[in-house]
Length: 236
Image 1 (spheres, helix red, strand yellow):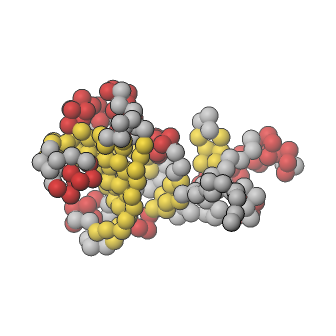
Image 2: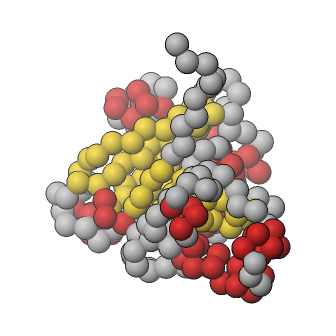
Image 3: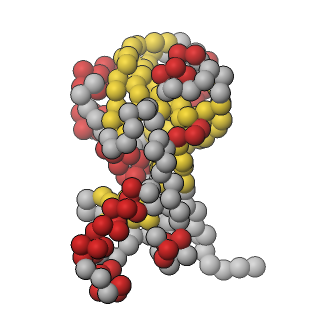
């Protein structure tokens, strides 16, 4: 933990393998495994199959009800879908209003499939991580909605599997907002309290939005972190 906090291993980088750490620190592999479990429980690292152990935060972030997320690639967004569980509340077809139509790049009144769900952690408290509304292009939505309730990955991944529509780009925006009494009750916050809204628009290779998600996170149970790199090292 100290070496991560001091910057020896920066956020977004991958830790050496267990054997290398054991040799470097002069301890057994079992000691390293125990230390890594503690770091993972503290939200400072994540361990993913075939991806190694990645540093997620320079200091502990995980309270008993908190959720920490570090995203840098489309694959990271997909991994988030694997690490959490979706509890579907509703699947409906509806005509979108002018505000939604503007974000979706379509005409007001056009029909989209809306999937409303709660996200919960697979390993922590049963308190919801967020309320999510996913809007899917109607033609695609009708093709996949029979599988949505059972599918636990991202709906965009399901669309790719079943329809071949591949995500080329995700455009994300984050803002503070307030939610309805229905949403507030579902995510266990007081009505009228600010929450964090994360909107992600999924674009295909033709830069067309075919899916959009809006998630509403309780402010005290979510930590979001991103990593920014300088494009070139020249100064002046």
